[in-house]
Image (cartoon, rainbow, N blue to C red; front, side, top):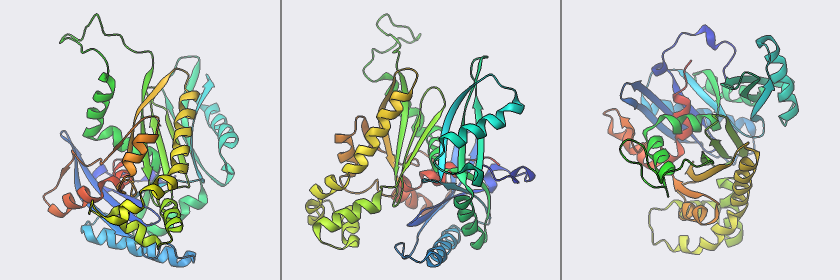
Length: 380
């Protein structure tokens, strides 16, 4: 979702940074692209202090401090940021219209947005993108967000002495990141050949039959306050769903059931000590606390499959986000979701500049920085 004045700027891709401002931390990625792919030129992460503070002014002050700390830790000079939005005030919907003139498209998209978005689109921004379709119809997807959520992110970046030159949607940034980085090709290859006879070198096989069902990629980003499911299939139409139940809710529910402080639960789930007694004690509670999330994700996958015009199979769910590293979380999802769940660190096969601490940051926190990477890939 582009700010209206972005066309006034003539910038190169390597002059912007991807800035993911979450509820508990700020993540920053800067990338350089060449013929060999992407290279990380800067990476940073900073916690937002007192994330449970009820006063909105205090929350903003803490968020601005975290942004500044994150930028300063990288030493980069760029002040042009690409930010993302998510949540109930953001919507991504695809559409299919009869053949229309370009003059008629804007009105048709606005009418569609007014019907499908769970908020008043007159108090927001609506943009759309078309994809190739048959001559008798027009297909594409629209993106809508309220002015409130857009201005909120822009205000934070401005107070941190940055320019928010482009606004994107977290779910679309996830898909962009997944498609652009090397791991995508490896994963896609594994999915497309699983359980099928191998082709001969010329690509032909009497035993091989192309399945009628299409394959879809699903990404599950579990943060502190929001969970995003992003799906893309062969039709190139993104499906995005944001859910309010996320890491903080899981931790709070475990803390309540076990009668221990939330910080104790959080520390136990993220501890590197595999034999931690606290992790063993929280095992059953983790399963109970995650049940709502598992149900919501399962329902989302089934809804997506039901909406597709042809049979679509989601074989894998690539899990990322700040909560993805919680002990036992991936194993729990893998055992209960209708598709295989795997941990996804988008930086596993991505080059870094010589600065060793960037590599260390990405190895430790890469699963939480997928949105920031996707934002950093956007062109202006």
